[in-house]
Length: 438
Image (cartoon, rainbow, N blue to C red):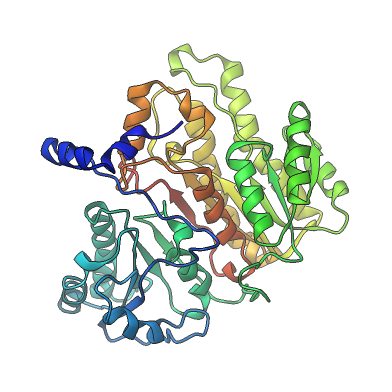
């Protein structure tokens, strides 16, 4: 369903009226397309504190583009290297660096702050670096005009290249106010073609016959993957339609079946590189009115099946070294939602799975485990939500609008990238910086 309020605020009368009434004024987001691979304007590199990062890598080339951005009235992206901030005094340099330029960042532009891990042996450094999180989240809530602000904690620039490419691109249009931690670069495999990084890799997406799952399958196929479209037998016709369009294959399977993992392994004798747990259902009721069947069906599809199939595919080595697991959580699992105790429990469980399994899966199998946590995404399901609840969902975020399935898909594709091996155990909200649980 079209967002008529967003369209209205793009007109002269709409801008006048919403400004006079103090209503949200969302800017149409500039998402990725073949003709728009990067934000308009150059990239400006700034520094706070004494940094030891080398940001001259050929895939980023930030220093080369800084001169272009400095001469531009509206830089499309600003990177602030604040890894050298170690105390309150150098924290002031964050203000000094960004204050003169923040107003000039282009509409739908990007600001990425680079921070360092908190040093447990230096509470002054830890305090200053933690301060960057409050700063980043606050700036994201006030900057407006479709611009995003994110914080990346890292020790090596090379390990963060895929993450910075994503956050500095239109692909991250609905990702803001996030803190992403980057580990060592041991699990990184540089793709031969950065525009098609999944070439030669096989990706399985559950619940991919429609909605967000279909968008994920499309995006992974765009990036070169051979996609396996998995959905329940009742949706087999739709799954085949999607698979045929993408040059992939369809797999009709009830993901809640006890032997689902073994059947997936049997269907993929050559192995699997990317596993996307997208299948999910809702059965909303307040707890006082919720039957045991409504509770158990949601937990079985959204959580138990994820645990069983993940365990089976790791144990069988179907998902081998360099593999990627991306699970779908939800901001409901992070913040809670009235009438969704079952759904929120299942999605919070996904977060627990990611945080526990990620270090062990990487150490034992060479596989990363991450999650995306969507907020209000424009789908057929949200289109059926009552008007006032739907409008509240759309406006209660820093971008003042709903996201699209492609926003979740682009984030999933970044986590599935062979170059994202240093991104592990992360739960990334795709919610326009929702005010819920922020």
